[in-house]
Length: 256
Image (cartoon, rainbow, N blue to C red; front, side):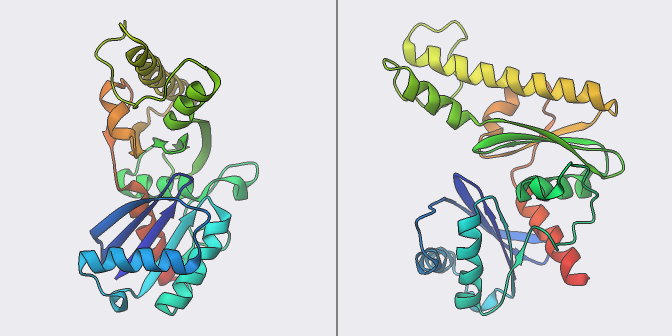
């Protein structure tokens, strides 16, 4: 069985694959202060509750945008599972050309998403990933990563509004009853929610105009399901896109 780990700035998503089938997944908060042993205990407890034995894990692949936790999880793999993990980055075979000024600057999660999206759809794509930051990535019809855009995520936007405006409260990110809101909480929700829908559709529309390939638009990430129904450009939500990309990259590198 394969353990895939996607480390983001806000959440760590873990998945267990038996062959090509995802049998279990978890989402936990990212904590940069946790040690190797603390993450080992956490994963052990998740496995225990799911009835999965550590000994059934034969390989691990990690995608991380938090360098300190990359080291922690590499040590975890060696200490708790007894082998060195695959880590998405320089030296990993992706099977995808990366057209970026400095390919090493592209976040591992963006490449993983691009690989998974193209493997599934085999067409030009715009992938919108709703994480701590919201990323927009363009893959052309030839399966080449062409670059993209990065915007502040929904949570960052809401937190900034709370912290910088003294009289505004911290509110839940949700679709408000109406765009013309009647109270402060709903007004903030309307501005953030519909403003973000507009941001997504605006960037995607401009990308489509620049690329001229009529790419398929897919969304992933924790808040994709909230924004996608109101978007006029998002065509599909793929909750497990990043985990699938990790599985695909593992298979490509194991075979090579």
